Every structure is written in structure tokens, then in C-alpha cells.
Image 1 (cartoon, rainbow, N blue to C red):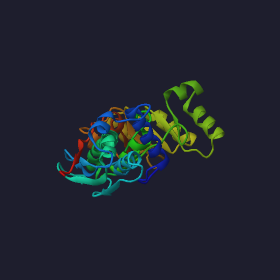
Image 2: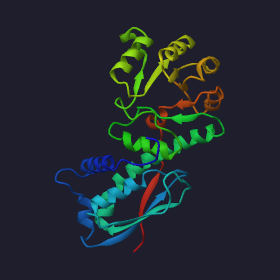
Image 3: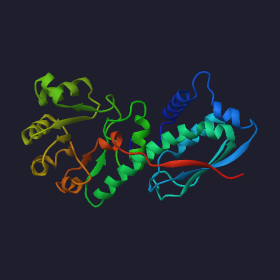
Image 4: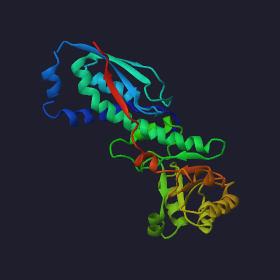
Length: 285
């Protein structure tokens, strides 16, 4: 995926799973049912409690739609990927009060998580602005939330490397060992899946040369120093796209981008991003 589009089927699956986890069987919100009349209607606001980048408003809208049986209205006030500041109102929702409060935690869990990933990604994208390098995510995602977290990376200015084991072949160290060599592994993948993109992990200049000679056009340069990366860029950078990967940080991002690689791969975008604090506030009656 290269755009910011959400997979609506995945959104629906995730929303129903998250609500089921919160509501139990039979589904119920005992506090809201006990304290709020069934016919009461209110308006609530999604409000940023910290500065950051927003992602996931359509997902939150789906949560409110489900809990209200489609009767709630959701007015989105900022665009996906927008920078916001503390106190900004992100959306206004009107609907049955019980359904608003039933949806509250599930909606906030999802949008806060997604906005946290987008905010972290934007820091990397800002640092890399003006270089040829783009920040990439990995498969180090929260189980069940990959579609949302990778969407959030795109919303924050990053790029998805691959969605899973099915859409891109990635030859890593264990594959090389099992097949006997980089060349053997590459040929086996090409023979079995001729139409699938292939990426090859390399750790030395010699491995980079071997991979390119075998036909690889995308190399993952794993845990290389900046000096080693420059050598790889000079040797094969005109024949393959190059990605720096392994223990990259915001402090070292510019130095790695300066080597001339095309991408920086950062697992922390999805496995270590803190949430962006977002709240749901009912407007006073």
C-alpha cells in the first residue's frame, strides 16, 4: 500500500472485536444503562490532550456508528495526518448518550494508539526531509492491529515496507543458512514466486555484491555502520534500492540518511510509540 486508504473490512473486524472485548456476552455497559435514560441524546467532542499528529478518526467514527446502531452523527474537524495542539477539537459526535459512553474507551484506545504511531512517524519524516531517505515500518506490529498501525505510519509521513509474509519475499539470515547461500535462496524464491517482489538482507559489502549479482534489486543493510553503508551505496547503489535497518534512532537518523540509502527501517514506529492522549468530553447540557 502506498496511499493512506484504510481497509474498511479490517476496520470493521477490529472494531467489533474490540467492542466485544469491552462489552462481554451478553453485551452490556452496566454503568451507562443504570445511570442514563435510554432516550437521552447528547453531543460530545474528541479533544487532543497533547500536541501531535492525528490518525484514526474514521476508525473512531465506526465505533460510534456501531454502538449507536448507525444513529450517531460524526463531524470530523481535522484531516487525517494533521498536526494538532493540546485543546484542539478533532471531531464532534451527537447521538444516544448511552452509546457515546459505551463507545468511548474503544474509540479512544484505537485513535490514541494510531495517533501515537503517526506522531512518532512524523518526527522521523521531519528529520529526513531534504534527504533522499524515507522512513519505513516493519512487521513488528500489535497482533490484530497491523492494518491500523501501518495506516497510521502512512498518515504520519512514512511508508509501509510490506504488509505480511504474503506480498513480499524477504530473504533473511536464516533463509540464507537454510538454502545454502544468498544466491541459492534468491533463485529458489524467483522460481517459486516469479511475480513477487524480493528483498534480501545483507550484512557485508560482499553479501551486497552477491545479492545484486543474483538479481536482487532491494537490499536490507542490517546493522551496518555508516561507513559500511557508504561503501555499499557506492558499490551497488545504482543497481538496487538500499535500506538501512537495525537499531536506528532519532539521534542517528540524519547520519544514516546522509550515507545515500533510500530508506531507514524503524520497527519502533509500531512497537514502541507512546499513545497520543485524546479524550472524549460531553458538552454541558
